[in-house]
Image (tube, rainbow, N blue to C red; front, side):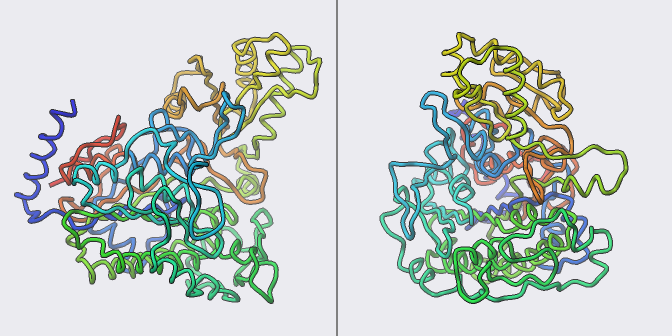
Length: 543
């Protein structure tokens, strides 16, 4: 298939250039704004300027019905899907972490003990656990490695999974520093080390995050001092928020935690990206280059204050201004007409459960974190089987919608994993906290759209014995604040926007997914698709 596919893609790419695209793009810019539901773009659009989100909405191909088609809507799976065009059942990133039954240990999605962090202290990180190639990998290999790929995000898993296996460099944030690992390089470039030494990160100490929007921006939002919002790192629940951390007199590690919950983190990161673009001269080489960007401060603000907060409005509008500045920078350095811009998000966000209950409109909502679900499972199994050794728990781990049985306990008591799995799945289906359950052997609680999303989340090697989806408006988080990770619209419906060479602007209501970006951009460039793609080519938006 791939032998036939490459010539077809090349014909499509040549046709696109004959229809108005005079030369191949110089730079692909893939932007993932962590925790950005599509609704934020329409709801807050009146407060955007002309050069950021509104520029994309008016001059890009906007897919209004784009959704992730899997259940485990977490950061790791989201960025692996965006980068590869495949879902967790293929790319293998089933959550931010999972349990390895063979070694009885917990695994982080980008861990790698064979490499070391450079530029700061921390564990080694790499894309070795990603089971497929990404768009950037195909770009690099198809160009004979002349194309350069740079990936930058505040989270290591975002930078690494967007950048793929063959990125020239990936950078992420560790406290006050941008760091990388020996998977990519032996030491930080001089420009990156100089940026870290410049003091930009500590320059926000004592800054006030204040409201900039008129009162009309908050009319449809919740109160500014909702008791179910988070109050972390000395920020308080109401504007203005002073960025110091818990120590107001000196910079401590807690200051950097506070910085993560403010728009200043994104400012710091965009300054690093502009420096990187200038120093590495992306977009000026012999082949198309690629820049991957992951903005994570939006996620921290959404988790803490919720999607109905005053903070999330200000955060989204501040991001709009940063994008406008960055697009102007790109236009000056490279020319936006010589770039392809893709914007999406790794997941959305549900309302804070207590905010739903406060409306008293009959909807059920609540918190069912992994401790609660684990306790339910332990209780079900205790009541079904005798448990002579209470020092051995029934479960090895509950994480990111996966339940892993403790094989050692089951073996000690002579109970088969299949029997315990059936007992748990039958019991969980009767719980008001659970909407759907599937088991490793393909036993589905029901055949509907949730089941399909659970299937796409299941990976034979890494998923649990049982996968589950919580009931609507229930979250796997003890609180306060909120959390994502479920198959519903509030977690799956995100922006998918393309703008630039070869793209027909417009609003498209056809079914789409962030997984479609990789194959669509590959088609524009005339390069092979990443391995085993699930996404489709958004051909209705191509010239």
